[in-house]
Image (tube, rainbow, N blue to C red; front, side):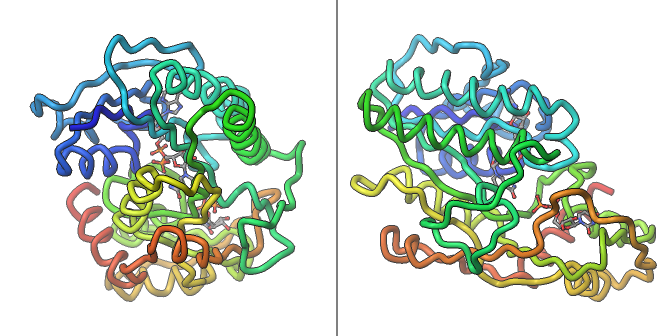
Length: 311
Ligand code: NAD
Ligand code: UDP
């Protein structure tokens, strides 16, 4: 039985990861400050003797008086609405928080997996995005607290690996959706589904021609665990579903699948909103034998069924 720390474990992805690790028979120590996650997400695990929770802001150093094998560092709000609310805190979480979690892992002789993001590619000039692409990021824009923060976090991981012997893994996660996304998360999949189920207008930012590649959360969690347990490949590796859809197509799918009569309305495109996004996953296929298996229709069906029980 491994002892595994999951920071951000009360969030959307983190709670699915905690669940999968507990199911695998591991011991999980979840660390979260509920800035964008919720106690409800981890409620089902509270009674499990192999689950422990520490309420903690990763921007403060963390001491865990226990043997630790692995640290998954997921702590950071992921939705633009949440990460822009307190941009300085987001940057601190990514830089100081990641620094603290690398030091926790290093001190414990544990491996750390850093949850990075497709946002390191910014508004990409290369399409689809390969891990070798260095990105096109506005360093002073409204998304920079997240994009540049995650880029600096990757730098910290690789410098700690090269110079101080940290055992790191870095994954670049593309847009992920599924049950347990917060109703007010603000990202496109939950916004569209919640609006459609309530019969409220669906809001398209810009003309809706911008694209994203959406991966279902179970595919991502499988990839995270494969990467953490890979003995030779440290990354970075893209984890995403290469299916590419524009926001109008997504809205039409959600309307059709919910049977909703919601209107489509438009709002201005937020600043620095990337035009296109699609992962090249050949590295994940080769190094991890990983590729997504849940298509958008199947994943949306499960996500709609979840939101139908909560909204
Ligand atoms: P989320 O907001 O649901 O979860 C993030 C969790 O981290 C929350 O529970 C939050 O309370 C916690 N947290 C934030 N700051 C913290 C701090 N300073 N100290 C302790 N806990 C803190 O988001 P998510 O979608 O589950 O994303 C999880 C991770 O995956 C994030 O690091 C995010 O950047 C990364 N990621 C997600 C996506 C996606 O599409 N969901 C895409 C790329 C990368
Ligand atoms: N978006 C939208 N309506 C919404 C929420 C988002 O049209 O209600 C757009 C947003 O401008 C972006 C895309 O959908 O172009 C994906 O946004 P999200 O916040 O989900 O993820 P990110 O931009 O971080 O990839």
